[in-house]
Picture 1 (cartoon, rainbow, N blue to C red):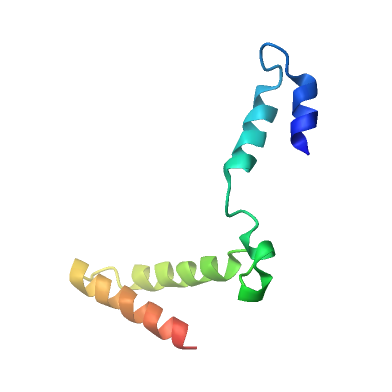
Picture 2: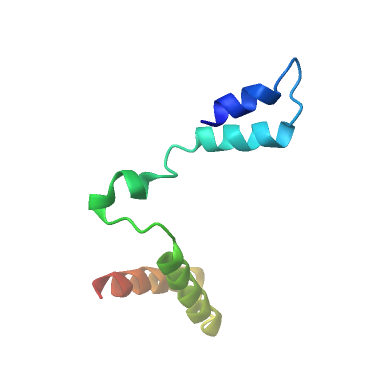
Length: 86
């Protein structure tokens, strides 16, 4: 689709370098449309739920900023165990 459009501009050097860069970036993204190709898996098309989960975790960790590294790891493990049980 974009290849025809891109070839129209390309001569011996690339006249629209950003357009070519964007096209090649899209071409290399294997998993961009996974949610669309495998709709039966129920993969969401955005990562909003995941962002919300991480925001909540960061807030809770900020409230408990005196935890040692080991206790912090236990806290994170328990947080994810409890959040996926719901």
